[in-house]
Image (cartoon, rainbow, N blue to C red):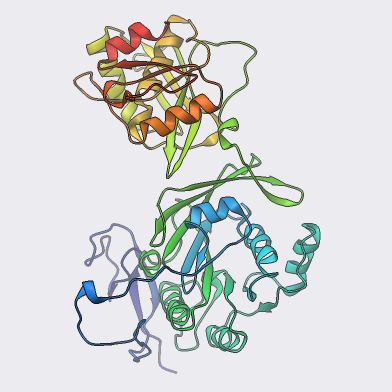
Length: 450
């Protein structure tokens, strides 16, 4: 029997090379080449859309896409209003975080209005039935197909013609046209491409469940994320009951939208007021605590920033951030010293975003610095005060996006004071909240106690 030839495929770009190298010769990524079985080049591809004549873009008639509501408002928010007809959604997350549970709940809600199909490649029919029974879901109209062969899945989709189909998961599906094992770069890329073409041709909205690697990225080639229309990530600490669903790509809606859920005995429950999760409930005002308003897509969220400043016991003071940009803390401390006269070079500084939320926007800069000053002086900030603003290296307080929406959200939750950038000062007063606009970090430090 002839020995099977092998090639090395890049998990980032899908490029192939005959020999292993430390760096991919196609995309220059390091340590991304994985050995796979060499596949015969067979033409299996057809165009996603119908071919036609070249025409002027202004002559193309743009129509609003048909959407299917999932019955879960937080999931609809992240999707941009619901599932799009013919759209492909990729949902990734850590094992056991609740991906299958959320999708089974969504199909249970949708089965009363739309034709659905649940394709399980990881669990048997009995296991899925036990989960539905445990969650007390109405699944009389939810057909289940336990299969991992792509060709049989395509036949089932063509026969039943569901409006929405869930495939759990894409890493377990394999095609007979390829010899490599399920989950390999070639199999994941081929199966995702074929299912995407089927979705576009038939109008079926397909949700693909994806595994993640140890680093938290979706397993398989990076081209997988380019094929689909929407990429969602399930986030959250396994030791906490709260789960976050975040959109990183969405061709039919806004990116960085956030859906908040709480895991309970009956599955995932929507959290209507997520700001309450990220605010600590102290008996009184404490030093080192500052509340900011961050923007997640179209949703403003109030998050408490906590800082602890303590005298350093070693020649190299520690700088540690949890849920915030690690490398930005050293820069902010340098600006605080240079432009506000508050030195921290001999202090250990620890900063934390309460509730396990991750804040990547620079609008948290001012809240971080005021929390650090409050902890250093061991003096609490004014009660019911929120802070927003980005800090520049020259010590200026730069504006943030959607400033008025953030202030209205803070006023709605009972906050009465706000320190904001001068450029974000509203032209008309917002009822219930007193606004202090500052242009420099030194001004913000001077106004932090009233």
